[in-house]
Image (tube, rainbow, N blue to C red; front, side, top):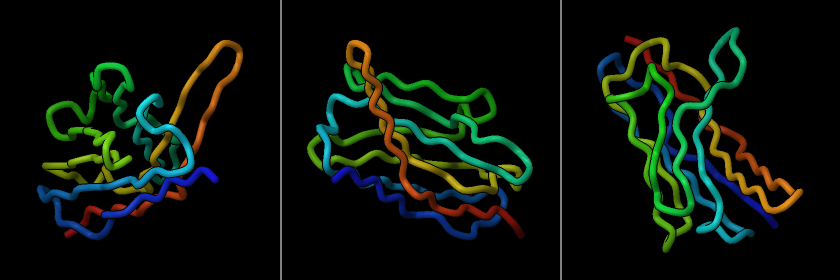
Length: 120
């Protein structure tokens, strides 16, 4: 059974840091691209950061570049999001995603999310 479980969210002051973790199980983690998405109030879910399965290269949404870092540990089936210099507009629910496209098939898994609140 596929499972993605996020953790590490919480309340943090502006300028602070949080590290989100996502524990994956039930699929071959190393061959999936992993991503973090977020949904903020009044907005659609948006991509925060993604990391490939092949070479671990990462990409970020423009507003997160230089502040957030995504990483993965294939030995532990974990993906992380280090968030620094947090802003109130970073408040939202952060979701872990696993994705793989193989031939005509797409495999797309989501966690249940972890809440991040940036407030003084």
